[in-house]
Structure formats: structure tokens, C-alpha cells
Image 1 (spheres, rainbow, N blue to C red):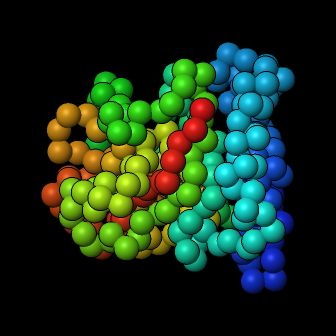
Image 2: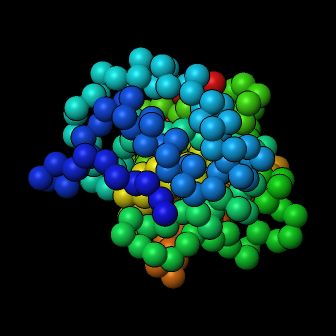
Image 3: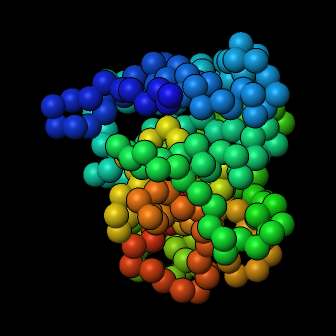
Length: 233
């Protein structure tokens, strides 16, 4: 099934090597069936992602060998993202699961028919390039914003020069680093909006990851705001 193996230290944190981690993420996507979703063979999918490997090593290589623990500090060096142009959200969200869990992720019924397609990337979070794959660097779960009004959290992150995650990027984060989602430390995805006050979010429901939404003006004690340092394609 999924290839989620990484070097684990005695403390339970992950040992990060950028090149090995990039290869693992490609294998994970391949084992989950992303090539077929994108209408490609595994070899073609690997070729599509391959040009991004050097950038991952260059930007995240400084962290090589350094232990990191997504569950504890809510941070991940980088993830490989496949956008909905290649793999529909409705098909990729069920491919996620909690760390150590068996139940598949799901899209909440609060997304009325046809509404999910309207949650597109904001201008600031627009995925780079046109190949349908990109890298997201320096990701933070954003639990410091648990209990904050989402619109205030988004403004604070913009002031720091950070970018909000899209729905596809949130799914990529869950796919490659399922340890990131823990009880009372879930996250909103302010990089995808539909023109109204709804802000997408991923949290835990029925022992599985759920993609839902919350109002931009309503705080939740268990819901922070995910962000990243940069994108690259």
C-alpha cells in the first residue's frame, strides 16, 4: 500500500535527508495510484516529478540528517504536491489517513454538489508552473492560531510573508506527513477560497481526516492556520 517509511530516531522523530525524502514521496504517490489518476504510467509520473528533485535537495538539504517531528512541532521541510488538474480532490482525499490509522479520509457533506470546484487557489497561493506538480517548502501546521479568528490568522501570516496552503497542498501534507494531523492541532487551508466566507480545513472526524470548512469569522480552539515559506515548480 502506501510507502510512508522514513528513518525514525529513538525519540520517534524523523531523520530528514532531502533526496531520500523526495524519492519516498514519489514512491508514496505512485503506490497510491496517482499516476493512473493523472493518466500516466508510473514511469511517466516519475519523469514528471524528477526535475523538482534538485530544488528539493538545494532548499531542504541543509536539514539533511536533522530529526524532525511533525506531530510535536507541526513542521515539515517540504512536500511534493499534485494539483487537481492531474488528480481530482474527490479522488485524492480518500487516499489519506491518520498516522497509524486505517480509515480513509473523506470530503464532508457540507460541500454541496459542485461547490468544491469553486474553492480555487487565491492569487497569492496560485500554484507555479503548468505541469500540475510543484514543491511546497517550510510548512507549518499553525497551531499558534488555534482559537484565533481565521481572517485574523490569515492577515498575520501575510504580514510575515508566508503563503497559505491550498486544498491540494493540505492533502499533500496529509499524504506525505500524516503525523502532522493530531487531536486539537488541526489546520485551515486559507489558500483556497470560493468567493464567500468559507475557509477549507482538515481535521479529525470519525477517526479519519476530514476535508470540511469553517467560517472566516468563527474561531475554533482546535483549528489553526497552515502556511508555507515558498512554492517552486
